[in-house]
Length: 351
Image 1 (cartoon, rainbow, N blue to C red):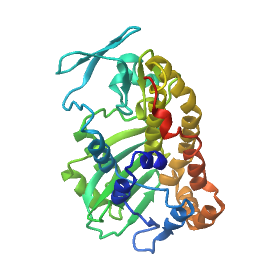
Image 2 (image 1 turned 120 degrees about the vertical axis):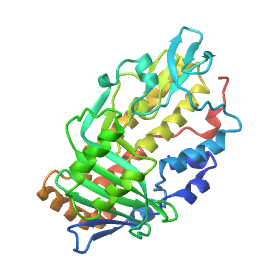
Image 3 (image 1 turned 135 degrees about the vertical axis):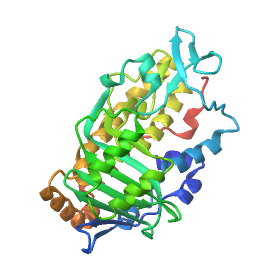
Image 4 (image 1 turned 30 degrees about the horizontal axis):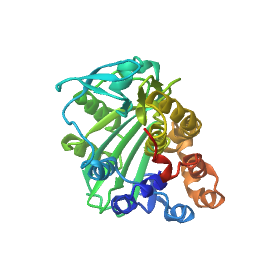
């Protein structure tokens, strides 16, 4: 994905907004010294090709780079899609209907495009037994280029700095069977207050910050697995087609690489054929990256005290595993590069 961003001429802008986290700290018990892991070792071994950037900053960079030659429609949503051999007709919630050569649904894990064309989400969503809440907080802990995580069995709370260290992202992650809270934000916040209320460490402060944040996000942790990503001239990309879940850390990589491969195919073949060709190229890469998520939950949210102790031991040993290229970091590196990207000149074609 870094190679793609570089081909787009945006690597400098992305580097300017990266979180720059150099230390991962694991809190054993409040009051005890943390276990600190220097992430710089991993970045150096990967020739500084390992970048982390928050979603809002990346979206802003991509929007600024494309807004002068791309039509954006804000404050609207697709409500119906019909197609035949020659075109796709799209109806909107507010705007007039329009006709397109192809439609690509890149609208996330809960894709409206997918529901309209392929069916209900339940047929494709694979819950991974966890939920997550993420929101922005002030850096009252005075962290500097640092990510800190604290666990109790089945629960995880973390804070990590954003670019400039003025603000942080707070994460509450927990194991759970399906909750049925839907999109009810008040019910979601109430559940988090109850579930994390007695956790200790900085969690009471995190919960207070949660009450006033303006970007509260809550969702189940799930993968999207589909037998096909396209139907005629309508296709899916990114999380809408193949969400790997945050437990893999590969969602952005799959979305960016997937878009790059799809762009190449759309430049060389008619839409329906291009969508099929892109899937044929991408599917092995996607499946390899989705497999990485299976080990993520044990690292981030161990289920037992013994599991937390084992994870902490693994963090202590992580520098050795980084040097050997094994462990979770090694799996990430192998899976994230398990595809050959098309050359920039291959985007030129009759379509």
